[in-house]
Image 1 (cartoon, rainbow, N blue to C red):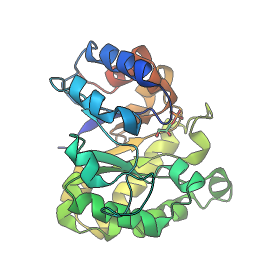
Image 2: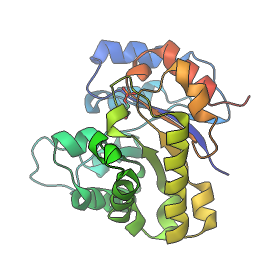
Image 3: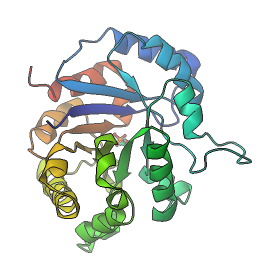
Length: 252
Ligand code: 13P
């Protein structure tokens, strides 16, 4: 069975006190039993968030990790470090990592392999830029992003992978992909997974949409058959809005 998921990527927002308040507010929100809820605070606040959410169903996810196990990589964080504080999932391949930190397919594949072999699950992000869409290359670009990374991973690890389609032109811009554009790409991605593996994997993989999802558009996006949830940026910084988005993905 495909899991419904709503994950909040807090990016480089919120100091310690703001993180505590938001986590505590979210703890009080209604628990929709058919939706897995995840939040991704900044590195320094992961452990506190894990502790605060110990008896809650909200999972704490890292925004990134380094591609090497350990060593002289000043300023970086390894999967082992994340595991040791109770974090068992990380985002990999967010478009901001690709754009501002030059993370290309090769490094992303290293990260995926190390995460999985270290026992971390992943949310793998991908998506085309505006110029790709304008030149009608969006399917080709997405296929290549997947072919060079997650689709190289063997079948047995796919239980630990969530995919997140985030068209770069829709991130933080207020411009959302239309529900039809999201559905069309999610269906294409599911088919890429099917072609590489089999029906049991493609039908069970959760594919999230990310890019300017808000309470006012979440319902329509989540109603599409291949959209299993969302990866939320800006709107995840408000407990009220985030909770409304979680509610929009619940059928209860
Ligand atoms: P926004 O929801 O702010 O557009 O960000 C989406 C995103 O990048 C989530 O990872």
